[in-house]
Length: 626
Image (cartoon, rainbow, N blue to C red):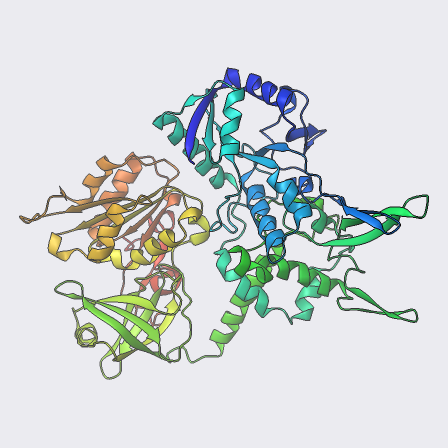
């Protein structure tokens, strides 16, 4: 069921009042300068402008203390007694966390002490209006979508009212309490923009895709020095576990009543950071602790969040709410701090390895596919002969060679998300490139790389993107295009301008068809000179600016023939795009690829080492740059 309704702002308090009168309504309310989920007694208490609550909503389904069994002598019974509630105003990251606990409590044998409460609840999400200081939900696990809610309400920025997306019959039942009508297309679009734009306001504290985390964190399991350093200052209090929306560890204890005959068996939230969590009694007053040090316990928590549950949950068991960071007395619990530290270790190891290598020694790559893309361009898909993965950033280059012919620089033409293979396109213009273009499937060529600096991914994530590619400039930008399409939720509005001299010079024809059809990209093409079969735009690439209105905060990538740059930048100036938001991919002769030979030097910069991608503001005043 998918239906979208609208309620006016002035009618919303009456709607909430009616729900309170008939239902057990739980929502975010203020507690001094913080927020908690609690029962609402009047509409004025509801604070949909909250940033994050102290405890997550899991407390209504998996309470901190929960009776499992009541007993009296040898008589006993379960205590499953669900209460119908409406949990209103849940942010999407907390919905995702409930999806995770739903799965974990139903995996194998279902825990009805949890699921009975969960099934009795109606979950209504709401848009985020304010971002908490330590949140990083904008950049972690974005491939995992919230799904366990019954409706989602979005307050429009113009204050006119709320768009209500109905997802289930439970969500639809709330319509009887308010004055709703069908939402218009404009209202639905406005709600979509609200939820997209808030993602851009959450600071991107993880400048890398989160699907790389599990492999890297797992690789550091035995790095005892690292975990002891990260856990330094930890009080082993377990607060980070207590406030976490995806932690679900518990302990079970029996409790006597005063008659010493009756009582209850209760479960309580437990925390893997506490010193006794993994402690086992051996009898005779001795014990063994399988995680006796703070570093071991800290490691276990991070492994649980970033590694152990990923296959089950489809991503990390961390939703980026930031509760653990704000609640930690020692200020060490922030997962983003840990993840960034571990990724930095990998970079340091790569740098150390590179320093000990022969910088001119290439590696063999095998041709898996070869396709004549145009009359002069040949498209190759390669894999490393030794079977190793290929790690690079979109926009970086590699030196490609054949012994006896020489070596030439070429940009990667595929995304690093496809780590076992990579694409290049070779234009047959010289001795080396003509020899390469004679190769076919099963042949080998030799590569050095990745080299240089690619597109600044940490500055592009969560932003609106425009790529302007002219001619063969689509090849290096295809790496970025595929990257964005593979991780579409990590970016804002995505627009692509592509221009060639004629239709016969267009590259990646299958991609062009897919991009025209895809709702995830606004794709515009033009040719300088048309042929009879061409029914698209005719004119230079700057004519495409008439097709799309660019927000002034758009990040722009330009790659193409040098003559194109000044005309494109003139149009960007008219659109109010700051030069700091423009990135240019420069082309020079790059013989060594490491800033030694001098061929690509521009003033004090080397295109192969400092580029080939530069912020326009960094090179616009450099003689010979453009």
